[in-house]
Length: 93
Image (cartoon, rainbow, N blue to C red; front, side):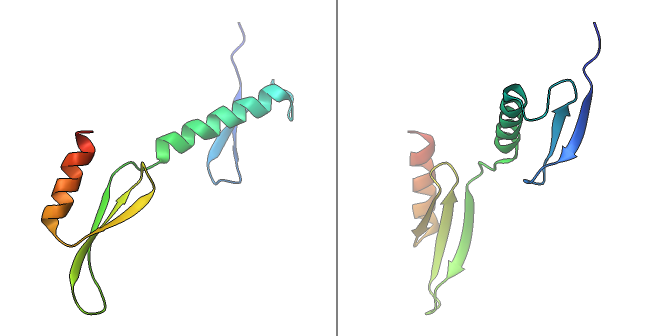
């Protein structure tokens, strides 16, 4: 059994992706392999942590802005207690 030779090239997405030398460049297998590899890298590098920031509006009133990466939504809350309630509800769905 001969070993598989893998080389790395810089892709447009700035990730290094493997290029299998024994697979003809531009072939269907090469394109599918590249698609699977990029999907796997995207999955590994995607942040799933909720981001919470304490902000103030122009009038100086404080509010909390929450970003939920699973729904891609920004939510605003007027108190820390509201953020905690939302977090509890989100994790117990």
